[in-house]
Image (cartoon, rainbow, N blue to C red):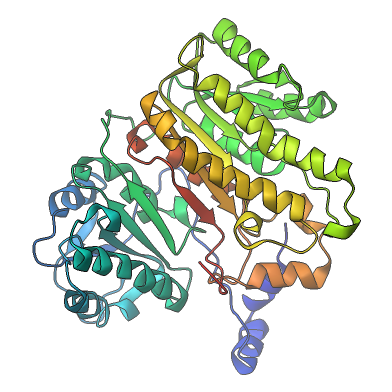
Length: 446
């Protein structure tokens, strides 16, 4: 959808007005295009003493043919700044962050990436080390809000023994695929990582995308198909025409089904067992809103939203993660779509916010069960994404939604889709139980 304010700020007159009045000036974000390099410019790498991820970083940057620097060059602009902070074990050692980023953060290029790598704080038996590693989060979230011109900042906690599992996540965060993801904390655990074709990492995979007939669901289906998956597009029968158009365009198939039906989970399991001999990727994108303030909301409005947005996901996942007669193959990927509303709440959306907070709770409480089945479960939490639904929001509310993040703009459906494709990648096997916000990093919170 058109962001007329952003278009205005890119005009000669608009640039003058914005500068004179001190208004936000959104930078057009660089998004992935076929044939683009993962990172388009020099990458500066640093580390604290006794850090352990140097080899993993070197392997990834070599594979993506990055121009690597270990010493800053005066006046050079960097596409990425990567700092291995796994060796920081006391609060006094946190000065290593400032010594690396203080002189270089202003050399971050347009659309640049700032990435700090640490260790999960709870993994440290020493309270001082756990404290220091937890402090990294405050630094990274602040850096994300201070960076300009579409640059992002992320923290990746890599568990001991998971060094080899970093590759997929580092590639995603360095690339234009993560354009609208900033200020996030991602956790990677030990896992067996298969070799993948980075041009089509989902080749020969079977994927299910619910709510696939339009908007974010349509973009998810397109992105998974681009990466090589055969996508089964699911939606209610009333959306059958649009659903068929999406499936035909991407070379997928359709499944018309009301996911709130009592037998929906069994019908999905039977469909993939019989038609596709299994299932690899499940994306729970289907969702509805029935907005009213709590005192004016009817029981029917409450029940409808919870049934579609949360209860259906629980039933389907319980069926797919069952130990017997499940079509979900080893290495399966389950991805839920939550929302910033489920984290921060939103006036008039008590039912929606509860359902999306429930998705987050379901992902975190089910991650261990998924791991026992050789699968992963994660979620995305979109913020303001430009869709037909957000286009219908009143003007001033819509403008506030667009500007109240570090990017000063709304995201695109493809931003959510690219994050889901990263979760779905077989090489992301160490990424389990994460909730990543695709929101440009809210100015009022994380």
